[in-house]
Image 1 (cartoon, helix red, strand yellow):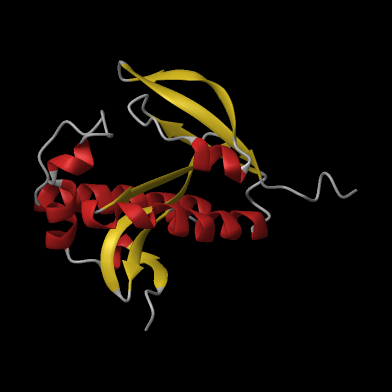
Image 2 (image 1 turned 30 degrees about the vertical axis):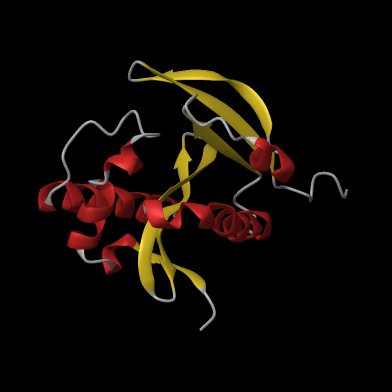
Length: 163
């Protein structure tokens, strides 16, 4: 295998893997809403919440695998009428973010349910050039639970422009 990236459901991942990942302080640096300690109960609640999205919308966050090994989670989650994309990788895999995002965005372009994708990033994320190269445009600053996030939008519905 040559660094194969695949997606699976979070429920297929051992809770201890997610606990170790989400307990790393380097992960929390860009996650201002991450204000609690991860343990088995937190993982069970997290995975159950993600499974609700899968049941309701037929899509949700995936576990991301590199050569069948868990390296993080991310994907699309429906927030109101918008499909929001997020990605949270283990620190040693941060450099794979663009490759994983390209694969996910390719999925979004092929899925009729997703006419556009939104991205919410904390202002601590300074390197936004790749997001712009994808074609995402800045929409607004949004506040959630007292924290400011930068909202971007990427149009994925080429059917509108080809008619």
